[in-house]
Image (cartoon, rainbow, N blue to C red):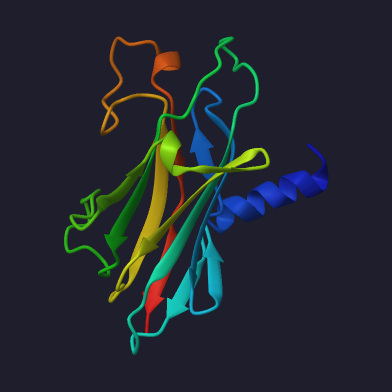
Length: 171
């Protein structure tokens, strides 16, 4: 890597602008939230006004693999999930690794996304956002509703991608 490439990667890691994939399911992923003329991307926070009904527009943009992955397969994204959760402050249980408010608010399949050049784009509106929250994305090549623990299946048949969140602060 060139020195600037390394610096850009480290900056992305430090600021939460990353996503991960297994098995080369996708080549790129962008997640943005837009409200009241402002936009935030993965790892960023958008502040919105509490005074009006606050709808937040979410855009998910991903680029599928164009060709074969390292296993020689041509994986396809079958579903993308939009996941949100409330930000409530520090947990009373420092050992907790879950947020009980986290939920899948929308699931999208190939009929739900639109092609824009090499990218596939999904748009969804979060209606009446009234408290601090985050939104993140995961996608899969499987029919599993939730990722299962790794088992005896081939890892090449169980591909996923995940984004870091975009945050919404209500003021």
